[in-house]
Length: 125
Image (tube, rainbow, N blue to C red; front, top):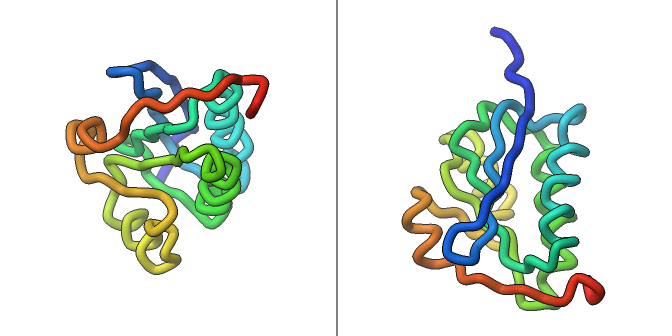
């Protein structure tokens, strides 16, 4: 099986930043994944939705990235949320109980109905 390269892009829907990631998130690509998230935080976004629909695989480095990237958002009342996780990723989120810190939604529409825009002054981030 060929490794799918990591890519990401972001856009804003209804005031909510959506980070769309694809490929594999592993020890090699987790720093890129974290950079993508931190870039949105640095812009002042405190609630960030990550669309995982096209992520084929995520190892412990990716799960660690979710945990570490969500920590600075919590004191601001913000969070990371996920949508479109495959069965293996969803299962690992449940086993590690990371889904108690990072909300997981089945569909993008469901996520957009729940995740509300939250901005903070970038200087405060």
